[in-house]
Amino acid sequence: MTHDEAELRREELALADPSQTWLLRERDGEWQVVKVDLPGVKRPKLTPTTEAAPNPQADDPRPAGQRNIPPYGPIFG
Image 1 (cartoon, rainbow, N blue to C red):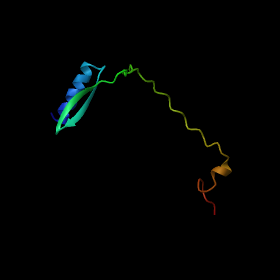
Image 2: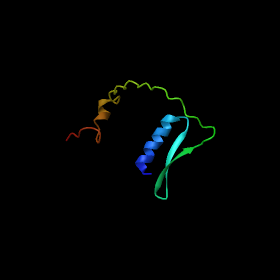
Image 3: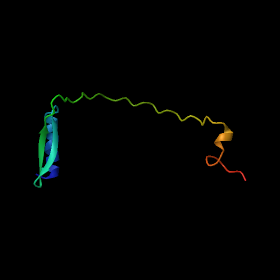
């Protein structure tokens, strides 16, 4: 079985039995799909995520004299 065929088979098995973990492995040039039994490990139930609103960028709180000191500000000459 090629890598692409094994990946398709792994996806089919994962959809058919999502409680199991399916992995790919290569042995003697052939790809295999293997079921991994991990005792005591259960997949967490997927929940929708909530995207946080972006935080606005605050102005630089330093005084102007400190903001304009090189190398962070202009050089007056």
